[in-house]
Length: 265
Image (cartoon, rainbow, N blue to C red):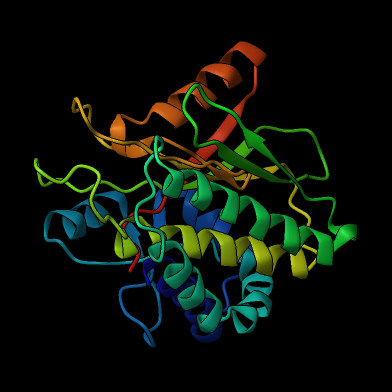
């Protein structure tokens, strides 16, 4: 899976090239970026122009921050492939995960309950979770790992909803194993690993699962957000994530950055 591959590449950086904070600062001051071009090979410093040329040539690479390698190395062995598979199986077992169907509501509840179970096992983590209600039956789920400061949020997201694009079968089966049960699984497993490990970020982290399908007359929608946010309604126009974004803006919530994981399988 893409996200786990990125973690493994980050670990490779620490094994093959011990980059000191001094070297990192000096190289960044020169406009250089440390890139890992393949697993098992030493990462190399590249200029911004060289990095852009790699992008134009469709060369895959990981652009990590090696200053956190010790923390990453400690977390990688805790990732459970079995857990990832089971989450994909469980979400794909629902007939569909639309925002307007029983399957969509049940899938949202399944994710919320799964996060609650993780938090209950590690009450000292300070992690929280709550549903984010919408005007449609399916809710979003917001789980949050507090930071040591009240700085801006970092959000990681995927969407829980699915849709059958056959015009005669809008409400037929739509298991969505890859799109996007795989992304939801990676978020849930990452949340579990961080909470289990007692991870304390400097600023709060939210994971979001949201809904994203395009507007069609009969389309159903789903999204779940988790502070580790899971958003409802992505498959029908990013409705769930839009409502959450609007509510954050009204509340003056500052967001540092966001990463969305789709088709991770």
